Image (cartoon, rainbow over the protein chains, first blue to last red):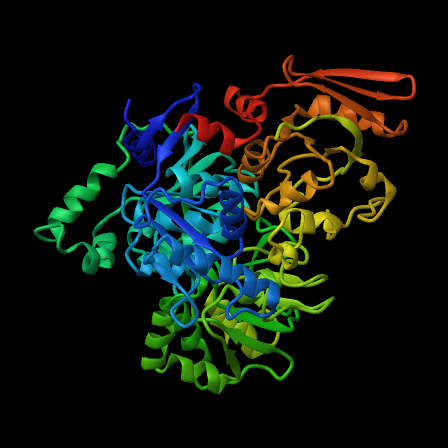
Length: 426
Length: 176
């Protein structure tokens, strides 16, 4: 019997199997941000175990509330900053150099095929786009990860999602993943890895694959995962070129992680996306998904473009294409948060930031920002936001607020119309 | 530290209760568990449920339906229960991260099949329900007035070991 990519990664990292079905894995990456890490640090200090297993395999960033908005968030940032200095964690990104964790860590080349990674953040599944096993964990798992470099998981069962056909114009990875979550349901992939396969995935950029994997958790999945290919090699090449003779050699090496033809899957789902329409959520769960036509005309108060789902350059380009030469409706406010300083810079150089500003958007620094209503862009009671983020829970962006999830393109069209709109009909 | 389990129960009859409802993100700026105490289930809107009410104040057990604790990885969700002396959750199923966070903190996330859960919810209609948990024997009793129902539950050996060790830090520190 062959193995899936997740099973191969588990085999290669197995430290211990304390009980049948429980796999304790060695970790290649322990990723940290300022919201969930400080309590782990405080607990390690309290236990007199203020140590790190390997300061080169730990990466840290301040991203959720940055620059700090008040004394409490300043304290969280300080705890993380002091800890990074104390343990000489070189890859620590502070104000001015910081960006959304799931955008900046891949951008720096920290995630490679076959890696294991954890982070105290549910959207850590994003990094599976590189053919890695990456899982969101709580603070206790993070704490043990920091101290011992291990994490425990149940045997990985995999749902294989085959995406056939080709994406129509104006339909993107966000629409695909919203559709898939709608089909799986919010707990359809609990305790499962979702392996995205097929020509649609192969044709996607790394950015689009990250969008796809980012929302695996919204179906309950432990990790989304794509098989590494030449697109992966090209993205990582600046970071790996000293390790391989050429790109073909890197590709040949990465292929060892590919799922075997006769690997066993828990479920296999086939979707042809050739006729897929842009998708939008209604209600307060990410599996409440409809084609945009059924939601068209729904009024919103705010547009939010950014986040670990859709705050990358390709996303900003797609939104700017719609916004170019147009103004957002008087009744809405638009906020765009490029996910990292590099993305911000590249968007500036390409004239994308100018397009957003001319359209009437507020451009913020790279941050998680409005997505979870912790810093800027919080909604008032009864307000609605068209958002490129990943979660539409009741009160997520502010108590009594409503969030409609959609692609950057649909969000841009919605900004112009002031109501949910299909960009293809502008 | 090892926890005690069972006690008066509160019933939340809905699936997919998420971590934003359990502890809204605006409170994640706290850096101690204790500071979370007043905000338990603050954003949960459910008929008959009052986050400031006596029923939640007295509860040591939460009973709910499917996919409990979905959403964020924030361990603040189990912590807000912990600092309110709620160490036992009973549900049909959990989101993975929330379930692991419960066991990692030495607390109990018990899974019951739907038929058993329906039996438990039926007791809630009779009056205040008190639950006794026998972790070793993997059995539970629920009592209200003159009525009593018995249950048995499955728990993985690893999760059981975590609870018995007092949590994952203790378990991992002794072993790795």
